[in-house]
Amino acid sequence: MTSWSPRVGQKELGANLLHPTAQVRRRTVKLLSTFGLLAVILHLFPEPTWAQDIATREYGNFPLVGSRIAIWIAAEVHLLFAAFVLGVPMFAVVAEAIGIFGGDDKYDKLAKEFTRLLLVAYSATAIWGAILSFLLVTLYPRLWLYLTEIFQVSMWIYVGLFFFESFTLYLYYYGWDRWKEGRAKLGHWTLGLLLNVWGTLVMVIANSWLTYMMSPPADVGPDTAPSMVQFWSAFA
View 1 (cartoon, rainbow, N blue to C red):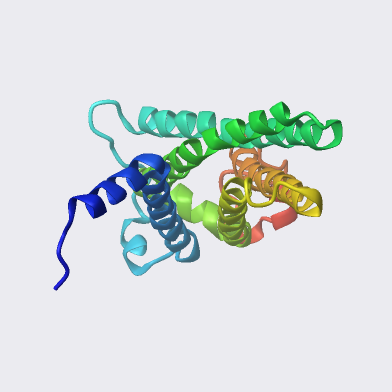
View 2 (cartoon, rainbow, N blue to C red):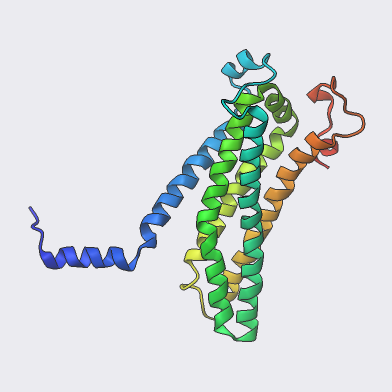
């Protein structure tokens, strides 16, 4: 049986004080993992047995504000965070490149501070994205089933890119001080470029769903069956 001593307690307290981001990091990883798993379940199983029972219902009803406003709020907040998550890595990569090739360390520190902002914003983006998905499934079940039949493959790819982006982001941020010299620093900068590639691809896929709803192809009408819609025509 081990005994507790004040010195050991002080060391543990000091470690917690010196590393306040440890708990935040663990909570963030848990949030991302949870909502990422939920997103995978939503996208990989778009037509579960219970969905067939509610597919005949056109619209649901959200308390107080109504379905349309609920969808609008979730989509707008998700879009604000998503734009932040997409844009900040671009600034970070440019600032880090100036620090590497210009030899000015302050730009490297600036790039790291940019990336630090992404940790919370990325979690918020995932949370509001999951909320938006749940609202679409429950409030507009027929629309959701219609879209999943057309964009099912791109939804699978979207989820995969989401995990790639998450992994690259955490590797990029938490490897900053470890890979800060020589070729390792160039490899770290390459991770930043890769993070931007994943983010851009995610945006392109999500935009294809929205543009199809807002301006479908000319040969698609209200009575067109999803099986008659060509994927690349809808995607473009």
